[in-house]
Length: 480
Image (tube, rainbow, N blue to C red; front, side, top):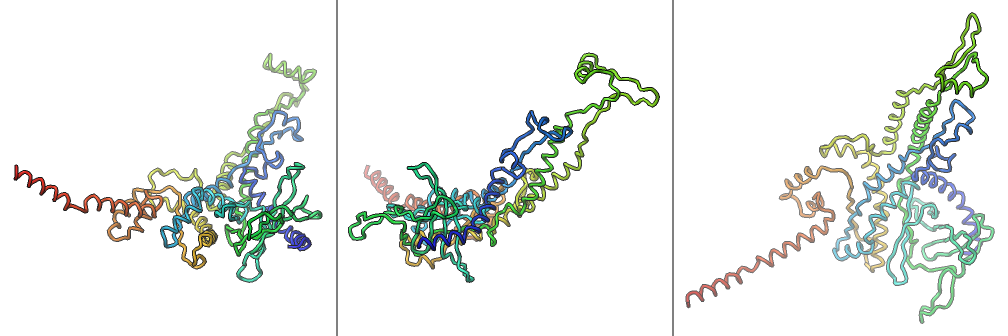
């Protein structure tokens, strides 16, 4: 891409990028327990300081506790743990190919998928990038959502036609940071840099990629352009929903209300510890004398003012509407979990729940997880097809790909085992292996069953040799 065209593209996509990152950063702040209630403290939860009274403009209400509630992180991790603790099983119809795909995805694929769920919940969409390393080995990694700005076609297919990736990078020679801007299309990636996001000093990074002679495989120079050779943009979007909106904004207002009520409650408890004495016609010189008399003699002197005298000491305290606040806190917390489609961990106290009761507990979370899974299935299918193309599979783009996702939830294994036992004689081995509560990988379970059957046949399948030994032994006995 030419310099002028790249600059225009960066300017045209900058507003959309800034708006997207503003939502993502707010969502990420809540995920890190830096709610809006802590903005005054630069995102840190703080309780009342010793000198709060001196700084307060209102001497009756000096407390200013600001502690954020970590509901958002709990809800996001709840879905990620429920949906992606165990990696889904991929089946493309060939055991050998299944193993190759599994090896390429790696042992930490479940963790990567968990991170994608978290990113998608915070940003509305997560991004994965794949490439070939210097040994032509297939690699992939998660790209932070705030680095990626996709460009889609305007037709109904919504095809990814280009992609902008912008991020900061350190320049070792000057120890200064600069912005790197990558432009990806289905054939190449072109890299530019700028000192800021105004793009006034935009220029290509000419030494970004090495250029080799295809005939001699010798290094001939460097370039800002690289031909990746995938025939498509090697970035895969993992959207959270159709609108690609973060989860936070479905219930952010409720979290803010909860923080406001909770911290107001704590402030009242701090303020009520301070009792204000109102002196009427005090017969003394100053307040120091008043404190000394009160501490030493447990009494104070007041001056009588004749008839209608109201001399004395009154006490000023703050009353707390405890019942109303407790009720509002409980109602707000309930609404947070309802709107977020999560599970309140303090609301489940049954120790021996049936399978039906457990399903009811997870019903809202299951609805949310199932929707996320539906969008992630398409993205994961695209990743598997990219791996098969790298492996040289001729029908990589048309082969059927089956995915089996496993939920991580509290379950009644006894009930599930009973169902499996009752249906074992009328159900396929594959279905039984998938439903078995003690089996984590049903494909490995079927392989183990075949191996066990083979071992039993090897051990008991040749009885003639045993009988032959017995006959020889009987013949020897006769001769003796």
